[in-house]
Length: 243
Image (cartoon, rainbow, N blue to C red; front, side, top):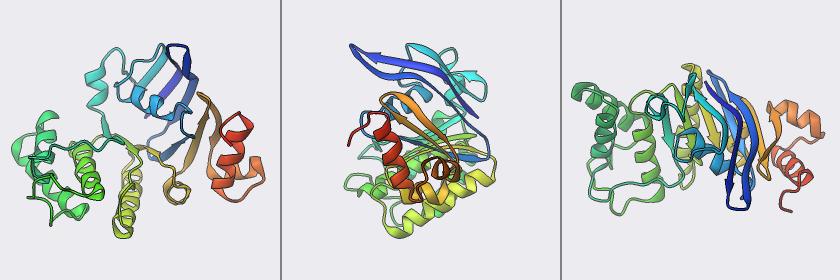
């Protein structure tokens, strides 16, 4: 479980995050949504310890990220928006490297690597160097690296960006499988179709604050709108978000 308790973050005169609080439960997929500049990315980065908040607390399975960053990060698997890969390493070498960083023994690392290669349909790229990979192929490698240690909590930042239809369907299936296994999943996307397909609850941030939090049906009922895209636009505009 991931708990965000009143976090704040300022960059100079700009308040990026202002008293943001929410909880992402085990066995659930929680969407974190917001327009550009709303504080969503800053909030995500505080969860995995890339940014230290000026106030408030982030807890991962009860571990305070600021007090024990290594302990919290061991409980996290993070697919960041950057999709950084090393051009001279193969896909399989990437996954083994991250398994080693997480302390997995070689046999277990090899077993999990092979399973992820199959799950993410990476057989044709597994032993190719990453230089020249497409955006979708880079995403698959980064996702495998995030999941190789079997984390209880998973952050997926724009996981279907650059993927074809079949790969997108595979990501959806994998996300649902993580939920069924009792994992906590935080899912960030600008594609409302993806949010509607896999998410159990939605947190919407705008101007650095949480402006709505509930299930898709609860947010539809609160706004009187059927489309999640319309719900998102209505809630962010009502709080001073971009037109």
